[in-house]
Image (cartoon, rainbow, N blue to C red; front, top):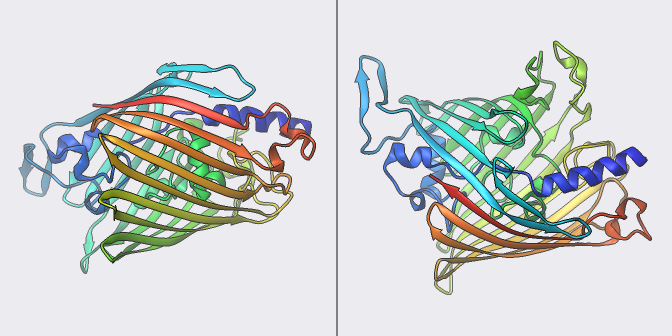
Length: 413
C-alpha cells in the first residue's frame, strides 16, 4: 500500500504539470483559414466546421497549391506547426515550478495533412523528456459512404487515450479538445479525464461521422509507441456513440463512451515492464451546448462517469492500481467569451475515488487572455476538497496538494 501511495503522489505532481497537444497551425496553413474558422471561443475547442474538417481526415484544401495528376492530389508543401508552452505553477505543499519550452513546458512539432481525397495523417515530434520522440501518430482513411464519412483510423499516442483515434466533442472525452491546460484543471471539468482514460495507447478504430452524429469502435492496448516492440494483439476495447443536433440555436452534442477488457505484459513480443496490466473498465455519459447567452459566446459541458471495483480507471490520476471501491464522477463546466479578448471558465467536480471510496471533489476557476488567436495566456486555479484529501480519513492524503494555481502561455505557429 505504501508503494501505491507514493506512486499516486508522484503521478499527481507530474500529471498536473504535464504537457499536452493542442490546436494545430499545420491545418491553418493547409486550409488558408484562421484558427477561429475551426475553433469555438478558443483553441482547441471545436465548432461545427472544425468537426467537419476532422471528419474529412484532415483533407480539406484552401488556397494552398496542390500537386495533382492521375490518382494523386497532395499539397505542394508538407505542412508543419509548432506548439510551445511556458509559465509558472504552484501546487499546495510543493515548491512552485517554472516551465519553459522543452524544459518542463512543451515544445512540439506537428506535421501532416492531406494524403489523398479521403486519407490524411497527423504526427507529433516532441522535445520533452530525455530525448526527442514521436508523441503521437495518426493515419485516417475516411471515404464518403451515403453522405457520411466511414473508415479506419490507426492511432498511437503517449497520453491522450484510445479516444484520440477519433473524437469531436469538447467535453474532455479526449485529452485534446478541452477548456484548460494542466491535468489537474482538466480533471475538474471532465469525468473521462478524471477517470484516467488519457493513458498511452495504440489502437485501430472503425469510425463513422455525419452532421447528425458519430461513432468510434476501437481495439487497442495500453502501449505507447515509445515502447518500441509494439502490441502483438489488442485485447482492450472502446466504444463511442454520440449525436449532434441543434436546440434553440445551441449547437448540441450528447453521447456515451465505454472502455472494457483486460490486458497484461505478455500481449507484447517483448515484456513491457512499463505497462500496467489489469482491467480497464469505465463508462462515461457526456453532453455539451455551444451558443450565445446574453450575447456572449458560451460553452456548457457536463459528464458523468463510473468505474467498477477492480478497474484501473477511477482514481483521479493515470492508472496505478485496481479500484478497491466503485468510482464515480459528475463534472460540469462553463466556458464564456466575456469580451475584451477574455474567456472566463469555471468547473465543478463531485466524485468518489476508487482507491479509498472517499469524496474527491474540485472547483476550478480561470480566465484566458487571447493576445492573438494563436497566443493564449491561461490563469487557472483548482481547489480539490473532500475526505480523499483529509489525512484524518485517508493516510495517503498526507502531502498531497489540495490547490493548484497555474499561469501558462500557449503559443502556436
